[in-house]
Amino acid sequence: MKALYVVLMIFAITACSSGRDNAERRVSDFYTYYLNVFANSEGKIKPAPEKMDEYISKDTLAQLNTISHIYEQEIIDTDYYTYAQDYSADWIPLLKVGKAKNCFGGEYVDVWLGRQNNQTYQIGVYLKREGGKWKIYRVKNVTAGYEHYIFDAHVIEKAKQHAATTN
Image (cartoon, rainbow, N blue to C red):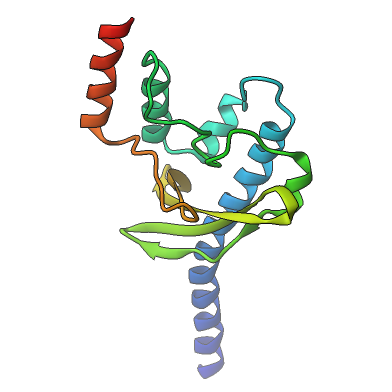
């Protein structure tokens, strides 16, 4: 009986830890895909919509779509997922994904991205459960202490008003 209990506890612990690894794996898989697209795109970055749906929260995709249609918006001045304006394929091997931590009912994962001269910078990736999967819903630039506030209704409304007067 004790042996059965020990086996069940091992399975329970493995199940709990694999859920935490899952958030890390999802972040790693997304950034491995996305950085290759980013580094190899000429002009506008065009990741496959089905890949974005697979890894990114519906709310985040909707907000980014709304913001992208605001004339001369200044809410996002770099790529949302990397906080970079360009990316080199040489930097992809420098990608490092940290351990997932519980955060506000979701998970938080530190990510280090490559830069020139092998220097890296850190972003923070927030995930939430959506459709039974961990999906990215928020990204911030940890190194610079900066974030694109894509969910700030006041900022978005102000940008829309500005666009209406300049367009």
